[in-house]
Length: 207
Ligand SMILES: Cc1cc2nc3c(=O)[nH]c(=O)nc-3n(C[C@H](O)[C@H](O)[C@H](O)COP(=O)(O)O)c2cc1C
Image (cartoon, rainbow, N blue to C red):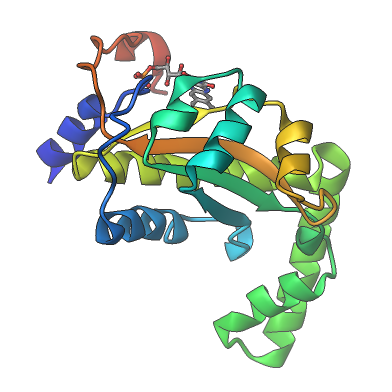
């Protein structure tokens, strides 16, 4: 298990060019989306929403808004990970319904609502709801990419895009949801470059 995971970590790299003729099978793509769905989120709010773009014309319209990166048009499935925004607000109907799923007794649920409202109010002031939501989208993205690598599927996380323009092209309502990150999935054309990372000693401290 440990070896399989570490192999996947080495296999995964930010793939710059995908084989345009090799498409990901439906079952494999559903598994990748499932890895995202099963990811942890703050208060279990599951703020991520996945828009899977397979249409070549739409990919071509997106590419100039994404620093003209070839991954956009050569990948098999381009997953735009959006974070919901307004539904995360304190007191929202969405937060109530998500928190109520736990089947807790009424007084416990009421207390839970209050904890959520206090916490999300602080987030609203300190970093904003989109920032809070999108940090969790990144966790989903990481699970999807490593899970894909375990199945021999390549990926590239993409932050190089003009957010406002992509959101406008997709008719997104920024009050409701915003674009957090794009992840391209497909199959590599070129071999992965050597992994470059700082040594553990430089990034870890034990106390
Ligand atoms: C949040 C984030 C955004 C990134 N955006 C891009 C991008 O727009 N284009 C790109 O080619 N790579 C992008 N990358 C890939 C990084 O450059 C890459 O992960 C890093 O250099 C380490 O290389 P490796 O992933 O191949 O090991 C991004 C990575 C992350 C985590």
